[in-house]
Structures are given as structure tokens and as C-alpha cells.
Amino acid sequence: MKILHVLLTSLPIPPNDYGGTERVLWALYQGQKQLGHEVKFMTKHPSRHPDAMLFDDSKPLESQVQGWADIVHFHFAYDGDLDTPYVCTEHSNSEVVQEFNINTIYLSRQHAYNYQASCYVHNGLYWADYGEPNLEQPKNYVHFLAKATWRIKNLQGAVKIAKNANMPLHILGGKRFNLKRNPYFYLSSQLTFHGMVGGVKKNELVRNSAGLIFPVLWHEPFGLAIIESLYLGCPVFATPFGAMPDIISQENIGLLSDSYATLTEAVGRIDKFDRRACHEHAKRYFDHLAMSKGYIECYEKVLAGESLNKQRPKSKANIKARLAMVDD
Image (cartoon, rainbow, N blue to C red; front, side, top):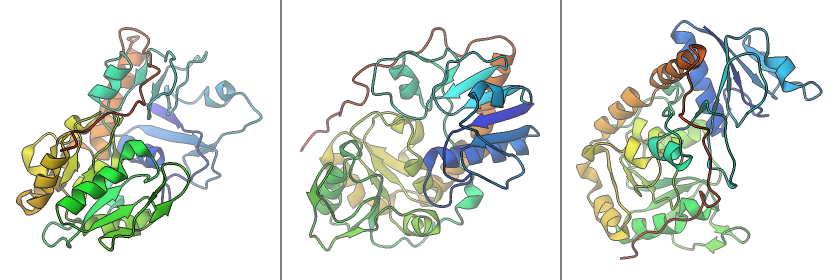
């Protein structure tokens, strides 16, 4: 099968540091090539990669994606008139009421449900880029991995849990103070801020962490931070919203709760969770091949003339509304 992925990003593929969807695309490219398919990807980033195509802003998108592929995979909402069969992956939560193409794929069971859809494929990553996990001797800290300025990511809640569990917290994704969106300022020496960190440095910080605190206050579409942490050996302590029940699906790799007290208690006994089980879980269910096989099944249905959802998916206006935790 000839597959063309389209992601109109200006970041390189694979990304050097940041780039969540870019990492997913790279993993798909690796996995589908390994499964024996011909794969190319189109972006806005000039690249010398032999399978990279450069999007030209001066030409219609349709004219640039026709003619080579058996199927086109858009990594954004697309609902245009294309002769080549295509699918779309919705990688985020919509902020407005809108309809989507009937062959739109979501990232988790809850993500699809929120759009009145049924088709989803879990994200996976190309674990060869992440190095070896630390399964034996983590250091005495836990970590938070998200944009600290986003209220829905709930840095404040992560700080509360770590403090009550008497665990130092390393924050990957923010500075010690922020005076703009979601203002905060922390003086505590128990908190270490690393800013927007990626690549080798991020992986090193995560693999040496005792665990991830991830008390998000929205229906997380998926959460690459979760599977990255699991792969590197970290149990996960999170809220049960969005994709979290799909990922943390066994007791020895973490705990889900909407109670601060319950999550604090679990972090307090963090050494009771199984770091090797965390690693093996991520390798088995969330690698590039598992994701690639899931998408190939979707492609085959579309090429056979089937629809991936029973009706056109539709988002709600309040899909990004903040959820609540029990403040006990």
C-alpha cells in the first residue's frame, strides 16, 4: 500500500526536541515502512529525507496530494473533495461546535465518544528514540510533564499531591513563575523547574524519576507524556479523564483517581508499583507497530468502501470545559 501522511507543520520530522504530533507521524512512518508499505510524508519543513514532500503554499492542497498514494492520511481536520481515498486523525479537542469527515479517527475511547464517533486508534511512539529505561534505581523525585501555564494540565494539583506526599517534584514544561496566562509563583526548594525541555535531556529526567503526576482537568485526547513515562519505567498517578483509563489499565503501573487524597496516598507508596511492568506495558500496547497496524485496518476499510463511523462526528462547544477533582 502507498500511504501519504500530511501534517502542515514547520517542525522537522522527526522533531529535534518538541513536537507531539510530529513524533506520532514519525512513529507511523517507521512502523508502516517496517510492515512493508511505501510511505511518504508532506510538511512545511524543508527536508532532505528521501520520503519527505514539501507543501507549497501557492498551490491547492488537492493538487499536491493526488496521483501517488493509494490513501492519504491527514493529521488535521479535512473534509475536502479528493479523488484519492483519505482518512483524518483528530489529535486535539475542538473548541467550537463543528462536524468532521465521517472517516475521522480519534485517539481513545473517550475521545471518540466526545465527538459522537466510534473509531479510534491509540497513539504509539518509536521507542528506539528513547534509550533504555531505568527499572531499578530511580532518584528521589517525581515529575510533571506538560505545559505548566495550561490550567487544564493542573500544575497546581500536581504540586499539592507531591507536597502532601513529601516528594520533590521536577516540572518539565514551565518556569518557576508565570505572570501571564494562569499566573503562579513557587518559592519551594522542593520544586525544580526545567522550562520547556525536550529530547535527550527530557528522557534523562523522566527515566530517573520515581513516577509521573498527571492530574489533568479535562478529557485528555491521549497523553504522550503518559506512555513516554511508562516506557522509561515510571508509574503514573493521574485523573481518570479522557484516555487515561485506556492507558493505565492494570493496577501495578499506576493509579487513577479524582481524589487528591487518594493520589497522594498512592505516591506515598510509590515503590510498591512495578517499573518493569510499566515499561513492558508501553512496549506492548503503545509502540509504533501497534499503532501502525491499527491505522492499516482503518485504511483497508476505507479502501473497501466502508465508513469508519456510523455518522459524521460532531464536537460540542464545551469539550474543553474544566473538570473537577475532590479537594479532600
